[in-house]
Amino acid sequence: MSKIHPSAIVDSAANLASDVEVGPGVIIEAGAVIGEGCRIQAHAVVSGHVRMGARNTVGYGAILGADPQDYDFKPGTKSEVLIGDDNIIREYVTIHRGTKEGSITKLGNNSFLMVGVHLGHNASVGNRVIIANNCLLAGYVEVQDGAVLGGGSVFHQFLRVGKLCMVRGGERFPKDIPPFVSAYGTSLVAGINAVGLRRAGFSAESRMEIKRAFRLIYHSGLNITQALAESKNQTWGPEAQYFLDFIASAKKRGVCAAGSTRGGSSSEGEE
Image (spheres, rainbow, N blue to C red):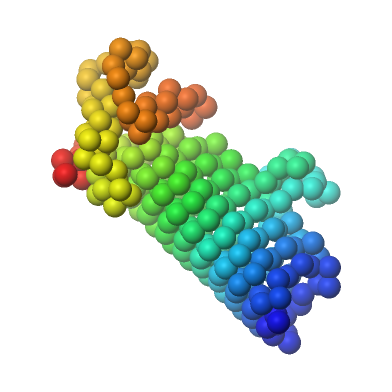
């Protein structure tokens, strides 16, 4: 049976699984869907635009499903926030709903959003993502599986953050961050996130091939268009090809440039 604190305001038209825990001062609006095993801690707000899976923890004062910060947004727009399973959403996280009719802001499974993280409208965060304190993701930002974003970093709208990359805290990024890299500064990459790749189970062969692709793009003396053309003359495994395809598809924002290996947290030389 749900454990709902007497001071919580839970609309009768909200859909809560039988074992959801709801803390003091929580507001859950009509239409909200909250799956089994979820814990909603004190003074959090879950709007009626949120659909949440199982075993999520929503921290003190978090606000999920509020209207987007978009001058063109029309209040009657029907849009959603979709949250998967087994996420930790800590204190004062804000996740805004989509800005266009029928659109969504999405958080996958097994991710950890620390204190004060903001997901703007239509952002998409994958699985097993770690976003440290006070990171700000603007509208339509995409964060792929396994990425780690350091505290206080900010990400421009429509930006893509590639899977299993490591982003240093306190930085700003107006350009796409390729998968598997260490990123820092203002849209710079230092090298391959070799430690992260090892922890994710990538073989030594796969890591070396990703490094070979990285060096072709960033250290061959070719521009990106030339390097991508040259890559088609070589054979690549699936992970390295994913890296190359990501860069080839970086049309809207462009892609991070090469920086000094001293500037980031790269472990490119480690095996």
